[in-house]
Length: 157
Length: 148
Image 1 (spheres, each protein chain N blue to C red):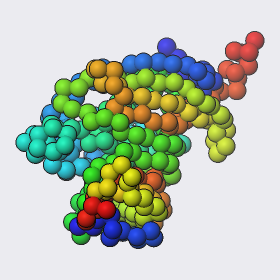
Image 2 (cartoon, rainbow over the protein chains, first blue to last red; image 1 turned 45 degrees about the vertical axis):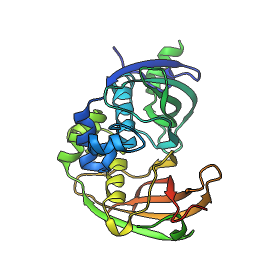
Image 3 (cartoon, each protein chain N blue to C red; image 1 turned 30 degrees about the vertical axis):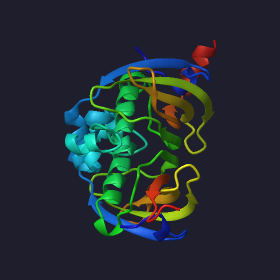
């Protein structure tokens, strides 16, 4: 199947995907390398914290989100990275055993100013747990290749 | 350890450094961002990146590692609700050496929670040539030394 170009994304497009179940091992492994705070590292310390149990680093939750985005959306598109994130909020803790999924809506798109073969797509993302609670939400940009000029003409005909 | 009262607007702290390897880039990408330009040198060369580059979320995670691993610059953090205006300004490549600066740009006592305040920091991540590779405004809840 041909990968999606920038032209194939439409403002208002909505999708939902994911289903990643978070393990203790991955929380501790990420925390040891990047965010060694007691409530990300140690079950006993986490039980005594205000979280009441082991929770993922917020930056790891962003990673879980990214993996679901890549597997379900970007792998089928001409993805060229991202210039950034407008804002991101961690709304609720992500615990061991939580199953996460992503709700995506395209809210804006425009051609790239710096690369005439690329365009930007602005998305609103919500990451939800198995109870339907939003644990993280953000607005961010993706860059995608534009359809080559010769193919654009063919589509128009 | 710095509390809310100890931090003034304009205060700037420096953290790091951290060396980035191709193995680190690929290992993070396998778990969290398996796009070709984060996994494979040749695939990276075929894009505008011109080679293997770190996932932006990997750069963010490495920035967190630098911010948290300096005991002299530790703050009495009560967590973070999120961040604003994150920009990945330049690619991070194997062999890059990163450091981070954090500058207080705003501080507000919490109305609802007198034991803390909210501080906004402009966080910049630099490479060995002092080019900004990533920047964002972090929002931190920081404990007061004494409740207001």
